[in-house]
Length: 254
Image (cartoon, rainbow, N blue to C red):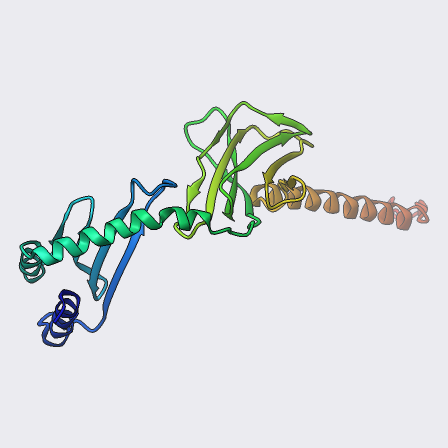
């Protein structure tokens, strides 16, 4: 029986006779690298039961590691087995040799998803902050900038690096701290290879709860003023036709 078959046979026995009542097992093996030639490639094998990591082999460590008593006993047996060590070395060499082929696989351009929102900030000289979050784009190269009344904003702007999602896509987040000005137009602009031209996302302050309350309050005051004026006009109109006539009875007027 090969080493791989012995390994999986043990896993099946462990699953059936586990005193921990395990009902779900998961095994994964994959290569990780960020260089074209694969010189930094890492081979990682992991075994889970009920979402608990029991054992893993990481080529950067060079040995199997167990995270329970039973799993560590098994890991020690693997580490003392020359066939296991040689087999793992073959796997890491396979990762390194195949890295260039992976990099040569063409991937389609993927247009980003953009979410523009405002948040309150503490301990800042500005009372508000806008966040322009750009998700699920490929390739990695992208430019995100801010416009204030049509001019690029360079102060009070910070951004993250392009962050990998782990599925060949990327995300980036840009922040603009600002003090709201009446009538000012603020936009987030995204430039990417998947776009025929830069896309402009305008910030609409109307959804802001505080602004809505102010608008509703002002509208209520104006509406109340209109009804007050209309009521006063009606009252004057009704009373303008009445004439005060003196009578001879004890100075009573009607």
